[in-house]
Amino acid sequence: LQLGTDPHDAVSGADCVVVAGLAHLAPEPGELLAAAAQALRPGGSLVVSVPNLWAAKAKDVYYRLPGRHRPRSTWTTFRAPDVSGGYERTGMHRSDPVAIRRWLRGAGLTVVSVEPVATARTRSGARFGRGPLGNILVDQIIATARR
Image (cartoon, rainbow, N blue to C red; front, side, top):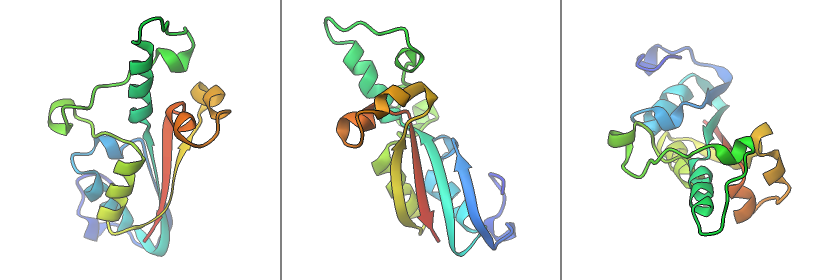
């Protein structure tokens, strides 16, 4: 499935389609996910991964507080893109759990899970577990939905 193709021309009947690192860059994420879902058989799964831009922005704000010094580790030196101006200004949509759920539901899919995931860069943050602090310290979100 390619961006810009007619979803009616897409092959259907796939058990699973993966959209990795693209949804937040699409002009209309819901339309991208709806097109990807067209390739699924009924009951098939769509897996979406996006960067956790909300967490990256929260880390930037934290390290700008007085008395906070940014460590030199890889995951803390990453500077979050400012997506506050919207897609028209930045070319990116805000990607966080709430936005992903909205995109999936808008694509006519049933959300199964939306999980923050620790990658190699943020494995140390995962020790805080789930909840607000754990969500801030991980840099990816993986969502699963069914057609």
